[in-house]
Every structure is written in C-alpha cells, then in structure tokens.
Image 1 (cartoon, rainbow, N blue to C red):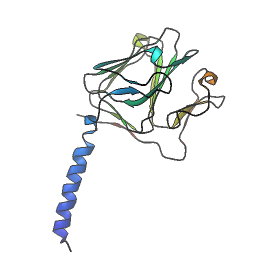
Image 2 (tube, rainbow, N blue to C red; image 1 turned 120 degrees about the horizontal axis):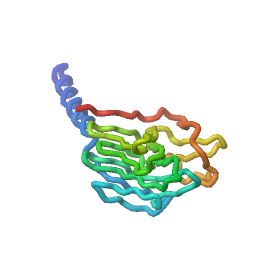
Image 3 (cartoon, rainbow, N blue to C red; image 1 turned 90 degrees about the horizontal axis):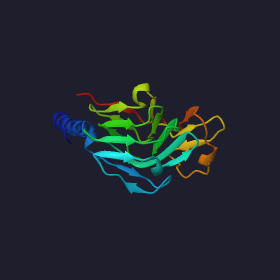
Image 4 (tube, helix red, strand yellow; image 1 turned 90 degrees about the vertical axis):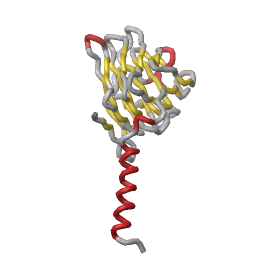
Length: 192
C-alpha cells in the first residue's frame, strides 16, 4: 500500500503532465481539411488557407462549408472568399476534434457574416484575430452546438453532416441553435 506522501507525489506528477497537455492544445495538427460532404475532399495548404466559394455549396445568399479539421497556428490565415451577394458563410467542423485557432480568420467580402460550428470544442489562442466583413464589420458566431436551425425546421448539422435535409430548403438567416441530448463543449481562450 502506498503512503499518503507517495500518493500525493504521484498525483502531483500526474497533474503536472495534465497541466502541460492542457496548456498545449495549440500543438495539435494545425491544418484545415474539407470533409467532402459539400465539395471535394481535400487538405488545404497554408500558411494562408484560401477557402474559396467553390469549395462549398451556395444556396441563395448562404455559402455552406464543411471541414473535417479547422485549426490555425500563430501567423496563419483562414481566408474565406465569397461573392458580393453572399450574406452568410456557414461553416461546420465534422471531425470530432476541437478547433485550435491561434491565427487570423478573415473574410474578403464587406457584407458577410461568418458562423463556425464545432461540437468538438473551440480554443482561441493568444494570437487569434478576426477580420470579418471588412470596414462595415460583419458578425462572427462561434458555437459548439450540434446544428444551426432555420424557421422552417431545416438544419445545418455538424454531428450528422449527411442528414437528409436538403440545403436547398435553407434560405435566409439561421434562427437558432440545436444541442441534441448533450452539453455543448466549451469555447476557451488561452491568454499569454
């Protein structure tokens, strides 16, 4: 049987390892992949990741993107491109891992809102920055719920990306969030 002192030392060592691991989430694979559900599956190359409109699916004034992974290291840029008529860029992460954002998320269009859904969690590092909507400042929504929903009941789901809802029924702005039978993962910010 271990003495109380031995147990405390082992626990302190374990907590130190956990502390090191939890303070280093930005060291995970830093890349962006398209999962192939709304466009061709591919790994984008950085440090400036060009996310083109044709990499997703456009329905009216909404542009939908589906990522397997979405991570940015310090100094990297996720550059979302869209035509002037796009009002909302709706992006989901389906791979199950948290997104580690320590770079710049940028939209080229001055009239766009950007939604980022990742049920696996989102971690913003000390170098994370946003430039959404240019000088007119669009909106940015980051959430760890399962899906965005619309007034007609249509969903853009990150946990069931192949659900039968047709994107063609998703028009206008989202009206709510859906978290199905689980607590959403946290959105964290790491400070220097």
